Image (cartoon, rainbow, N blue to C red; front, side):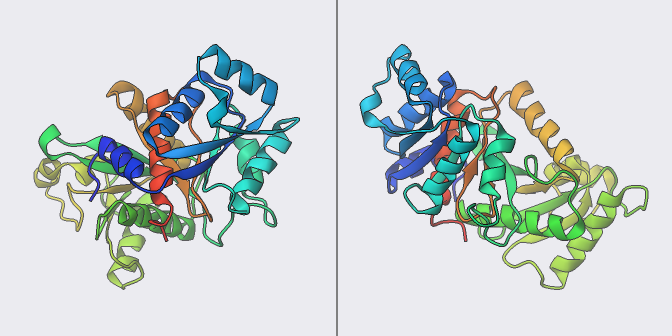
Length: 304
């Protein structure tokens, strides 16, 4: 079981070196992360975009261009299309967004004929360390990147995607908390009804190799003491590995609040397609991007 992001980076570096297809890698944090991934042996990168600008930025940062392959592209749409094609034809293992607009990259990735669809919904899982230093673990937030307002069926698929990521991290029976603002189902809060229904689906055997509880407020999902004080009983009370949020907006805001107020250097990846997709925020650091690269590379062969 991988319990920290530093362990994830180490394990990824010890495994087979993967190949990244990076769309428009012109920003400093992206290029520094790619150089470090190359240095420690996690991944080799194919850089797609304006080759003159890419080379100029590498030179400005003192990073040698010789260790990278560069594929020229004329505009954002062609950059996205070529990067996706590299992954689709198995010339690369992981798709990575550089300075390209997320919507442009995801439009190419979601193309029904030439994209990276697998028949499952795509969803983003954001990993952050949680707990005391001597007993910390990784906790996931989903979905903060793809589906704005998931239906019950979509939320079930998002849950499965997250569970499969935790299986790849070595957690045999991940505990998934379906979050809502209240602990009792209420028509006023549709997420609370989703939580109850998803727990019932798990009880009926529809989700394998995991534990599902809901609806739960976030304090009950992460704090055994909060569950005790509130007198709430749940299969995952105070011990959740995966937090399934009501909406993209709620998940995204919470993830960024954790990232910038704790603060932490997280990792996140879009899963559910034929290959991991990394869509870091433009404000994310080189370290957070390196963590995401390690996660994406680790998931190759580990996520089914």
